[in-house]
Image (tube, rainbow over all chains, first blue to last red; front, side, top):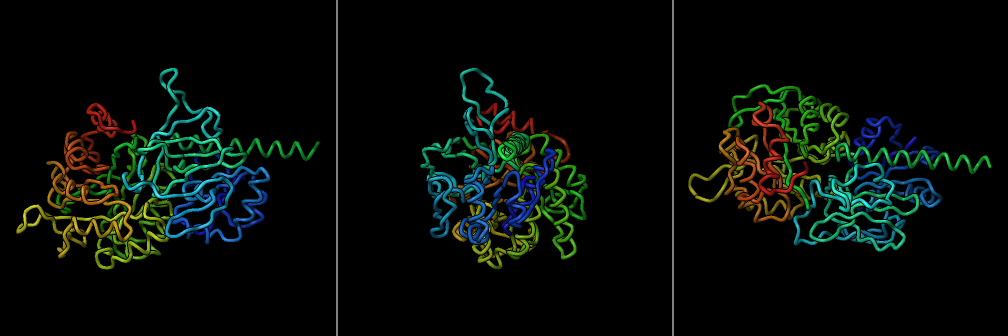
Length: 219
Length: 254
């Protein structure tokens, strides 16, 4: 069972709906026991960073501990931004610090918010993008459109993180992967069929990780 | 590169999609959930649902509608119509809407934009402006409220600039003069507003032909185009619109 963390911020229902649509069991919960026993965690977020961090409260430490111990965690949008060290949205706020980097404003030379469907170049070695159709021509990078809606972006400085980029006048990180920690700046639950495939991939990651941890327990 | 968005607009009254001319003479255009799902399958980039009755009774219906749409549609959608408090915004976002649009309430209480943006982030706060060409001052547009029925003293361009500073993350700009006429968007209005702000502008009102969409993007500087009549009554499919724009060099998500 995947647990979508319910910490009283906007649009968390859509993520559950999307998992249900692909036949995957997902539960909306803020109960620490549910979170501990989940096969994977999703940290959604339609909120301002500061509000989201304070709403998460004491759950932050638990989520951090579990993710570092190998439980798959997927942060979406502000939930993704919260994986990093700090954000400058409406003040300065501390994040979970799971991935090194800071959340900073998109340069005002661009239209802000960055809103709509943008192309993301999909590295072959990022698990969230497995089994997505290949590029039409050989040698071209694999890329897909995803839906974005944000005014800040994560300047990723973590050398251990794999990063997928989109182009918004500069290469802007759109997704990260580090150990069992995954994040997307875009909304997979709102990115049509391609987005649903990304959530299906996350669900497979959770399934595999659960199977592995069972193996470890029995041997 | 960020693509230009095609956004069908579903005006909802008594749980049915309706469409009129200049906001009057409404025609039935179908079931909102079915129509929304169809547009999503056809490749719409986003949807807008506007509760055009916006009464206390319709408020409950619209929350239920949002829940149903969110179970069936996996693209972003905005909900608007009669929204006046942060709690209402919270309820709609929690029910599955990606964004909410505010209009009359923001004119009456501009602080609502700030309060909502601080809590939910400005990316989900859309300011809807219903603008009418000034009869006395050429090149100016007057903001109207209450579904276009009540003129205000506000100038549309100045209001857009102020709203951006207050926390609006996007402007849904409807020309009251062009709405439902199918004679093209008011691109002078679109250009005046999109040049004045740095947030995305959705052009609305007047789409009738494919080149109108192109003109709103190129002449009007719009980031997205909204339409109702030409999709509801099946003049063009979303795919036809996107293929047309792509053939003229506009980036779209095809």
